[in-house]
Length: 214
Image (tube, rainbow, N blue to C red; front, side, top):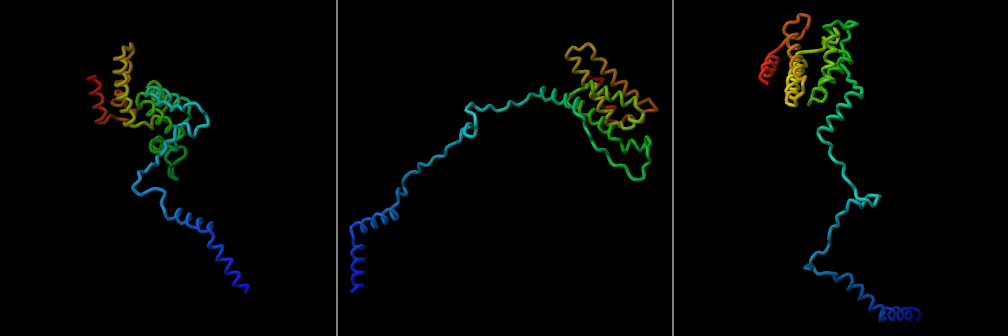
């Protein structure tokens, strides 16, 4: 009797209009797509504005690129104020202390390596030709430092002197001829000074001939 009564209650609940309508609604919601497959896509991609990640409401300004002249001035100030430390080549364990002049040429001290690097940097792009010449003159007067010079760095100075003189002459500078004289003084030292260990090579003569034509 009790089981029969339970079956009647279950049948009455399942056949209730509310249960039947809710079941049909769920079936229609799951089985029927909200859009047909032929409907056009309406999704759009929103591009984030530059202000989306900014805490300020003011418009953002991109930094301006520095000009070539500004970069040259900044680099010149860097060479004048910032100390450079370049580690020299390590010397063999059997090298004499203090080093001989010949050994200094192959195993230079840190101070000499730094000075050579600064001189080349000053001449690169004519950043600071005056400072490069000052350092070069001081190096020529120091017997120990002079042995760190080679024909490559001397050729760089010869070429820079001629080119700087040409630029000074184009600008109407009254003392432009001094730079030509410095190039000839250096060449004379390389060619005829027996105490100076650097001798000219084929590039040296090419630079001097080209300088005469400018």
